[in-house]
Amino acid sequence: MRLDPAALGFPSQRRRTLGLRREEVAQRASISPTWYTWLEQGRGGAPSADVLDRIARALLLTDVEREHLFLIGLGRAPEARYHKSEGVTPRLQRVLDALNPTPALIRTATWDVLAWNRAAAVMLIDYGSLPPGQRNILRYIFLDPRARAVQYDWESVARFALGAFRVDAARAGATADVEPLVDELRRRSPEFRAMWDDNEVRGPHGDARKRMRHPVLGPLAFEYSAFAVDGRTDLSMVVYNPATPEDAQRIGSLLAQDASRATNSGGTIT
Image 1: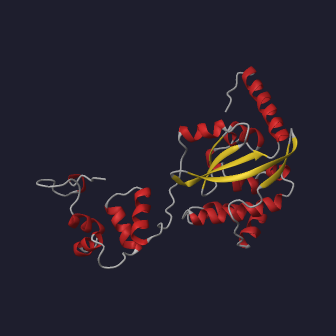
Image 2: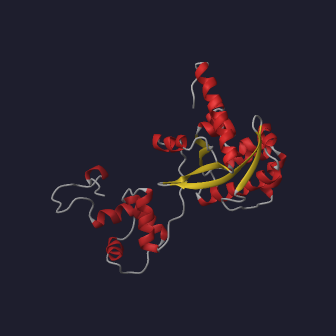
Image 3: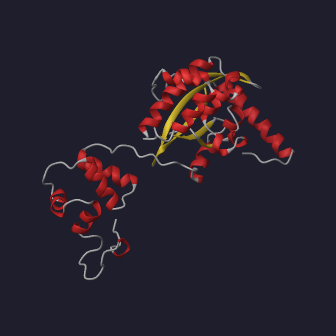
């Protein structure tokens, strides 16, 4: 990446090469030019994480470039920096839609749901019917009576979700970002408060099979999987794959009926 010296306040005349000079990078990073020169030459020992972070900011590196810098300099990835997400790309939405009739959604590290397919809306919950600020999986589990109605063992599901949520938020560096949500749920849900104070942590997958009681189809079983979204460390794709061909067929039939009703009534299928 070649930065424009003039845009950063440095003179651009009489430069033999594009980009910033070593002393200019050092100045922007608030480190010694001699130390920066040694660093480029592999001398002077390993840099600290703080120095690498300042260099990354000085060079306006992307998250991927910053991670590469840390892997080269320290042999490990940097600590996570959480960036609040507002939505997903059309490409990711098309991936979700292609998974129908398998329910699938994309959530942030704070478990806000950003996107979902029609199967998720029909089989789980229609997040489109909720205000954007309320589209959070923990809010649904602990505050919405529908979550208790569809689960055979609500407490076990809630404990797993809370333990996995705690790990996701910490791994993404979003601990401070979830404090308002945690405070709200502690006030509004005694069960949440008790479980949160237990400080349990869970792996990302837990029990791979989840059973639920759908209000129309009755008992259903799903194989639950969570995947990291390539290039978006802040997002995960969650997929509820029907555990049997029979369940998949029943779900497909219900989606077809739902689509037919929406078409006949002039509604929009999402």
